[in-house]
Image (tube, rainbow, N blue to C red; front, side, top):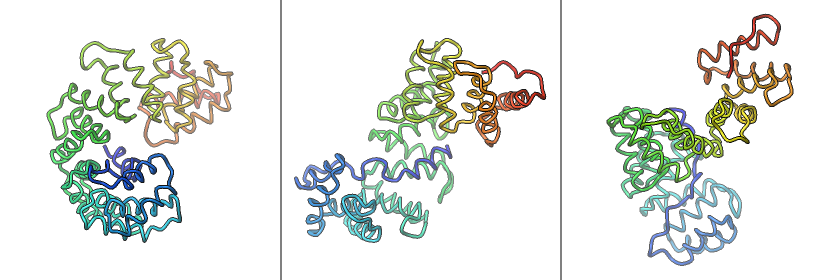
Length: 334
């Protein structure tokens, strides 16, 4: 889970910077939040600045977000932190979470995981799903706390029942691996499906693997293909490789060409995609034969420390040797 955790930790505020406005929020604050979603940052700032001056925690948080990223005005991280703090002390969960993120990453403040966790706990106590997910992540990795997979799964569940796609994905991982919960592919599929519906490309990929592997019954390649394509559209390079392999075996759509998908995966930096694209270039599979490019891509694949199985790495070595004219033909690939 480490790779997913690191990626998630770097995506600060990839989601909206605020929860839904409370029912008693002022009309101007609600409008300002909508303007942020519509990317009319100057309009949002014009509405929210006077509200923040009047001491509205929600407005202080929203203005802090605009200041942090220089949206609709000059970037001012120091002022953003001051505003986040004022709103957080007043009980604004979004600002509590924001301060946790800044402390966790060391952005504008000294990096301090323990302080970040304190802020996450405050936000989680106020029902903030993002903070609950972060607490699940730190317990899953033992980052600033003792590693505790049971505690991690419990936090993921708290956020997942609030329809947080990241938490739903992580909870699916917990069930798939039997970490902190009893192993269950049925439960894993349920949570992956919810996360995929909420936009998680990684969940779509994992759910596709479940359908492709037939662990819930008969294999369902058609459903797996649709999910792989959803994951690929979301940038999951492993899904591009999977579609390419299905196309190579005649299990994809007629318009799907294996080389096209391997090229996409290679361009995305996936070592398996790099190797398989090299094979396509060397053999002239839906591409003009190009040993020079094939040598480049197989070299890229072999330079990666991870991402190739032992068998694929051996085949890649054999392909590179064959291109150089030093060995017998490479084993059948892909």
